[in-house]
Image 1: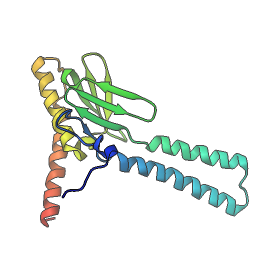
Image 2 (image 1 turned 120 degrees about the vertical axis):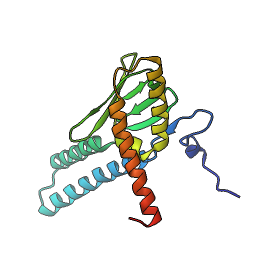
Image 3 (image 1 turned 30 degrees about the vertical axis):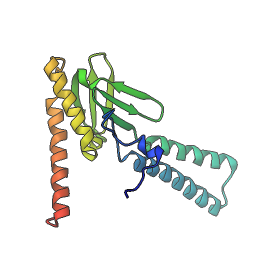
Image 4 (image 1 turned 90 degrees about the vertical axis):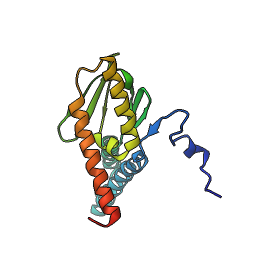
Length: 183
């Protein structure tokens, strides 16, 4: 007899009925953000107390610094379903129609971002690594891009998607080599 999935976990898994795919790495990244902030706060308070300079004002300053680190590290939760991409950040939620995409482009910088715009003027930014880590999410997004392209709404984006696809293919090849012992 197979293992039973708890009800709370069953809501997070993709089902054939809704076709929504959730980021499988989000929970781990969220735990890392919390852990890093708590560790920084504990370290700062310990060092300050050890030096004998800890006061209420300094403790509040360290707590604010740890809170800032938490806000910076908090990952966006991405979910993709047929015709829809939803990005939930710490303070805001963005949804776009992926079956009516107008453009897809890459923003280079410290953290590379994939920027998607739909025909309604909505815009969403995601880390391309989310798609590399979640191939099912990539396949839904790619199919919706083809739908948009067929409707003639796409003005650009094939190059950006090819870059993500190349990263996904490279990661898949590395995984196959690692599992087969050829790496």
